[in-house]
Structures are given as C-alpha cells and as structure tokens.
Length: 565
Image (cartoon, rainbow, N blue to C red; front, side):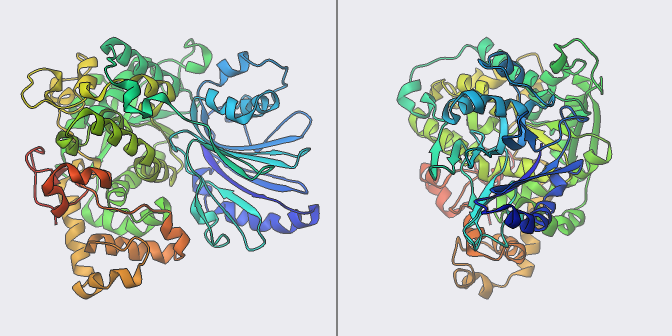
C-alpha cells in the first residue's frame, strides 16, 4: 500500500520541471500512507509521485515502476493478490524489473485492453499508468473502492489524481472521488465501468443456493490470498463474528508464506491480534475470549473518551469526511492504528464488508422480502467506498498500517452474492441458522469459534468499543452547538446540511480543512437508521422519526436498543 499523485496533460519538459517541487509538496501531504520511500517520474507529458509503504519486495519494489525500455511508468496504491497466476498467463515475454506484485499491470497493459485485464486482477488498487510513446494515461480503481482515489483539474486544465483529497483540494475546484470499478483513458477522455456482475440483479440469483462448504472454502481462500506479505502482520479482532472469522482462518495459515508456496517460515510465526475500546467495552471482553480460543498473541488497548475527543480534528483531516457513522468508528480505529504501528506491524486483516454481503446490520431484520433485501445489499456494496472502506483504509493508513478485507475479495463476492437473499434473511420463528442475522455465515463456520462469539449479536464498531463513546459524543456536540446554529444549518452548509448537533459539530471541523463546495460534495448525504441506505428507511414506520446510525436505534432487535436522539 502507499499513495500516488500524478499530473497529466503537461506541455513540455520545462513545465514538468517547474511543477516537480509542487508535485512533491502535494504528494507529501499524504506521506503518512507511504513513509518508507518516495519515488518520482517525470517527462514532457506527466509527473508521477509515489509514497511507498513497503509490504511486498521491501528491498526492491520501489515505484513508479518502469518497463525495461522506459516507455511505461506506473504508480500503484494497492496489492494484486493473484499476480503470480497472472504472470504465468502472459502471452508475450516481459522483463520484470522488480518482485513487486503490482508490476504485472505494466505487462498486462502491453498485451491486453484495460477493460479486459482489469477484470482479471484480484486485488485492491488505484493506479495511474503513463504510456510515454502514446502520451496516454490510464487511471483505474478496484471494483469496490477499497483503496481511495480522487481526481480533478487545476486552473490550467491539467488532470491531477491522488490517493487522498488533501493533495488536490487546494488546486482542483472540481475535486471528486474517482468511481470504483471504472477506468479512464486520457486518449479518448472516456470514463468506463469495467466491473459488472450478474449478481447485481436479483432475478439472476433468485432460487440459487450456495453450499455451506463452498461458502467456507471460498472465504478461506480469500484470507489465504490476502496473507501475501514480506513484513510483520496481524489481525483486527473486535470479538464480533466477522473479525473473529478472519482471525480464525488466518491463524490456520499464519506460520507460512503464501508467496513461497507455503514452504518457508513467516516473519512473525505467531499471529498477533489487536482490539480497542473504552474501559469495560463489549468488544474488549469478546475479543479476549476469541483470542484465547484461537491462540493469538492478543493486544487489547483501552482509550478514554477524552483521548478520543482530542483526536477528532486529526481523524477528520485524515479520513476526509463528515459522515457521523464514519467519524464515530474511525476515531477508535485511528487510535488503534497508532498502537499497532508502534509495535512494528505494517499490515492487518480486517472484517469489513461482511455486513454488506450477508445483511448483518440489524435493520435488515425489517426487510419486507428477499428482493428488497438483495437490492439493499447491492446499494450497500456500491456505497462501501464512502463508508467502511474509507474508514478502514484512511484510519489505518494515517499511521502507515495497511488494512486488507477478505470479505470483499473479488472471488469470494462472486460466491456469496450469487446466493438468493432469502437464505440470508432472519426468520423470527426459526430455531436454525436463520434465527439470527448472518446465520448462513455462522453455520458455515460452526466449530471454528466459541459459541458465544459465533452467535454474538451484531455490534457496530462504534457501539462495540463502548456505548459511552457515542453517548458522550452526542452530549459534547450538544454543548458545542446551539439550537440557533442548528436551525440555520442549511444557510451555512447548503451542501448536505447537517440534521443533528453531532453532525453539525463534525461538519465545522471538516470545513476547517476542506472548505470548498466540491470537497463537501464528495461526502454523500441522506438519512440512515443503523447504517441503512436512505431507501431502507421505508421498511419500518418508526425509522423515519428515529434515524440514527447506531445499531442500538433498532428497537426490538438490538439487546441494548435505545431511542435515537
């Protein structure tokens, strides 16, 4: 993982030289993502700057990656998990310059069209590829948007791209998120969607069952692929179902290196797990139970409410959003990442994506039928790049720790999402696997975890770190924002005006760092109940009047249900 920054549509070598110092300064604003090395490429048409976090081939994989003849320059933020398979499938000879997993993109570009080879990549990535001979830039982002990418045009009309908005916000009045699953060709000016799957349409999956063994093996394969690393790694372990399953599967492979055919010892033979919460939090207690059963070297960290509150401005500057749910959950994750980095760990596996794939959020209990359940899954997956993916990536990468998300592995998604949603729905009268959200996933891994973890009720991360965290944030915001200010919110913030004092408080901090209307427009709006999309508000009449992203807002479902304020 790393960060990329690029400027294209230059007119001469002189112009590129003039912009070199500016490019380095702008890229330096995201150097927290790649503190290990900085690389620069420039010619008469483009500048590429790369800030590296060395995970694979730490001694020799510095970027930008050049082809042997120097005609191609590539800057990538991400990991290509199936790079070895892709290298074996090449139809033309290609002389690789490094052992980087990302260099295969240059080779694929030489022999295949982007729309084709992008659909062969299994990984998380955002890249800018410059073809010097053709004066052509190819920019692309992974299918789900696990890795961030922004773009815009400066005052001279030059195209700029960067891993984080902070590198573009001062120069691009039209700064925006680059859409996941798309690629851009500067030669034609076209933005094209390359990632399109049959399972997006409920009619294509209706009636389809997925065997529990197939589901389990697909997830195990995803975790196995994502253990690709040459540096110390660990797992985030909240004690909930998703992170515990990631840890359980990772523990089975932790003593081996996937790159070497599972033959040589890993840098850290014992798997380390990490959790954080307020004193007495549900997550810390559950994580300890899971870790003891799995045999991980566990590190449970406590933080105080005041420490979280103190971190809020830096959290918002790093994650580049004013979304309430994201900020609530990003803050403890940001604090945890700092602890992890201090221990020498550079990569962690995490459980994001499971709730979107299996309908794990508690409001899914209210889904009226399988079609609407499935359509909400697709909406949630499409929005992940604005929420959980953004939170996990930017909170961790603020301290140079790379998060990986096996539940969003491309091949696993094709198995889990071709299943009819009726098998994922909760049946209140059931005593079998559908008695609880994500029941089919729980049943697939029976025996992998203690029963109290395998069948633990869903806790959103911002709830699980301790209920006092959210309650305290609401109380603090209420003291900071007056009724008059909230009433006039639409005047001050015409783009997505905040609806609560907590949202107003976060918005004022965001505005301090990112004051433009374009920056505000990169954050989606709309009401939410327990992380729902706005469309799902219609599922229950009570949702409209008590919309809050906390899982405790779902009365009659969450064990600690409370009225949202």
